[in-house]
Image 1 (cartoon, protein in one colour):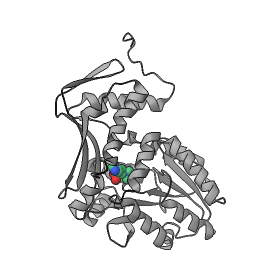
Image 2 (cartoon, rainbow, N blue to C red; image 1 turned 90 degrees about the vertical axis):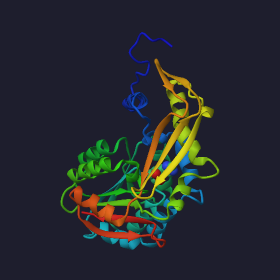
Image 3 (tube, rainbow, N blue to C red; image 1 turned 120 degrees about the vertical axis):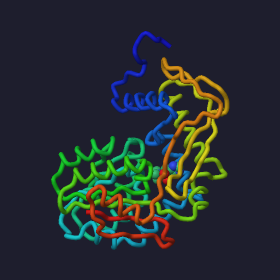
Image 4 (tube, rainbow, N blue to C red; image 1 turned 60 degrees about the horizontal axis):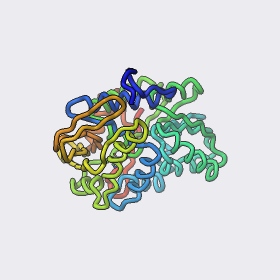
Amino acid sequence: MNSNTKSQIKSNHPKTENFFIDVKKGLESNPKRLSSKYFYDEVGDHLFQKIMAMPEYYLTKCELDIFQNKTADIAELIAFDKQPFDLIELGAGDAMKSSHLLKYMVEQGLDFTYMPIDISGNILSILDRKLSENIPDLNVVRLEGEYFEMLNKAASLSSRRKVILFLGGNIGNMELEEATLFCIGLKEHLATGDRVLIGFDLKKNPNTILNAYNDKTGITAEFNLNLLARINREFGADFNLDQFQHYQTYDPVGGACRSYLVSLIDQVVTIDHMRISFKENELIDMEVSQKFSEIDIKELAEKSGFEIEGEIKDSKKWFIDSVWK
Ligand code: AVJ
C-alpha cells in the first residue's frame, strides 16, 4: 500500500471515514477498544438475528412478550391524548418488537408517522419491505445515520409531538456516564408532552445473564470477531481471526456484562498504513451490555431530568420498558 498519503481511507461517505477514525483511535488507546456500534454490517446484522434466535438470549423474547401482550398498555402511555404524533425509534433494526405496537396503533386509527433510525441502511431496507407488506397503511420515514443527527433531521421534517422508542436494551451498550449524557441529550431534544420509552435489561441471576452472552455454539464469539473481519473487508486489514479469542465477563454488583477479544499470540496487524502490535493475551474491549436494577433506572431518569411515567415488565420480570416524560 502507498504510505505517502495521510490515509488511504478517504471516502465520499462520511460514515466510512468516521468508522475508520474510530477504529484508529480505539486501537491506539490503552486498553485497545472497538465500538460495538460497528458490529452491524450486513454479516453482523445476520449474526445478530441468529443471536436473537438463540435459546440463551432471553432479551428479545422478554421484550417481545411486552410488545405482544401489553400492547394496549404501551399505546395508552405514549398516545395518551390521541393527537397526531411522530414515533421515532432509535436503532430500529428489523422492528420485530415495535411492529406489534405499530400494527395495533394503526388499527386503533391513531394518526402517527413511524420514523425508524438505524446506522445500518441494510436493515432499514429490509424493515421497509416488511412494513409495507404487513402494515400497508403505516406512514414510514426511514432515517439512516447516528441517533442525534437523525433526531435533528426528524425535528426538521415535522413539528408534531414526539415519542422516542429506544428498545432492546440498546442503552446498555453505553457505559453508565455515557448513558447519562445520552439521556440528557435526549431531554434537550424533547418538548413538554413528548415521551421516551426505554428498554432496560434487569439484573437477574448472573448465570442467566452470562449464558446469554457466552453461548456454547459460539455465535456471540463470531459476532465479535466479525468486527475484525469487517475491518479486513472494508480497510484491507489483515486480522487473523484464528489468533483472537472471545472472552465474556459479568459483574453482578455493577451490572456490566463485557466482551473482549484476546490476542492469542504476539502479533502485528496492518490496517491501511498503520501497524498495530498486540502482545500475547492483550485485550480488545469490544462491548458492554449494562444491566439495571429498578433503582438504577430511577437514578438515571432523575440524573437526566426525566420523570418516570409508567413501567411495563414481561411475565418473567426480566426486562422492563420504562416510559419517561
Ligand atoms: C443490541 C444491545 C440488544 O447488548 O444485548 C447481543 C447486542 N451483544 N449479544 C445486547 C448483543 C451480544 C445486544 N443489544
